[in-house]
Image 1 (cartoon, rainbow over the protein chains, first blue to last red):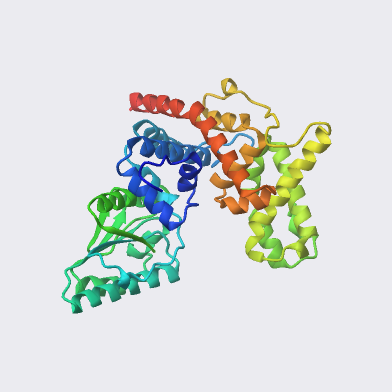
Image 2: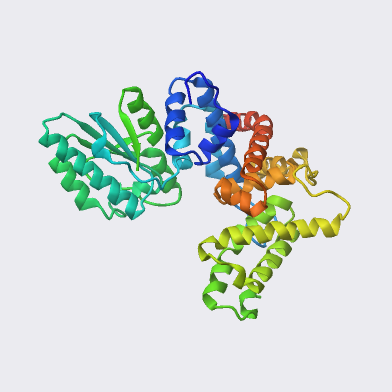
Length: 227
Length: 180
């Protein structure tokens, strides 16, 4: 996708539905960083998607008059008006499941690794690649920075009550001060709406949304890699 | 009555099928917006599924398989009800108008009314993706249409909904803020 090329409606829909491959997804996120109209359009699509979900959330067999979810509606309406940032997209537009590329082959020195899934193979691969990358960089005397940004079910790895990786993450953080963990506050809000208590591991930072953080870092020249 | 008590297929299969009853009902309702018909469609879907359990080759695809059966049940219903009408995505919608939406559930009712106004093919595409999270390829398989058709139906559906609902959502937000 070149920068001058218009992003088709099909592409915008595929983005919010998590149907783009990693390359197109990344290109579109980059494009949104500088294209207000595109960002607004995508936000509208996200809003519509959520409105549709909410409209039927109270539909159950035998229930003649489905009831809407009041809390959720307030949020949907607020977002529809504000269209604040592409961050609205983050909670589940980011399709999980793609395997991390060979991180050690990346020449850049600032890397953001995005984990949107708690699936073992995804997290294991991501953490292993990050550790290998940091170790190799240290051995070569390179000053690098790595940020792991988690949202959706990927947030589980950063929560005290759900993480199967707490010890490993703590060991990595202690060994590599240039490694940062970022949790998505939007995902946390959604979890709290469902009644969960969200307690994060020590040293985990919070961004308003995963996508905010990704867009910000990409604008700063970081390399984005999705696990 | 629990449907699963009636059949000789494995208990595990029966349990998995019945566990999907609620999402199937939600989907059926979103397609027809008629609680009674939705119930009938789901019942028929579950019956057919249990009757044809041997045709499901990949257990991982149970949900999409059931949705495909549901879509066929709906087709059959319309064929029985209106045998001379063409069954395609441009088939006219029916039922409640936006003006008829109840005040108490105003937003949800308005959204459902607008979805109901969509042609059936668009309605099915948008609800399969948004309510059940199916991929485009899965929706194509469920509805027995090409992936490109799914994409174009989604585009048209969302464009129609955007035109009709985004401004409305903003108005509702103003009301919510004024109440606070």
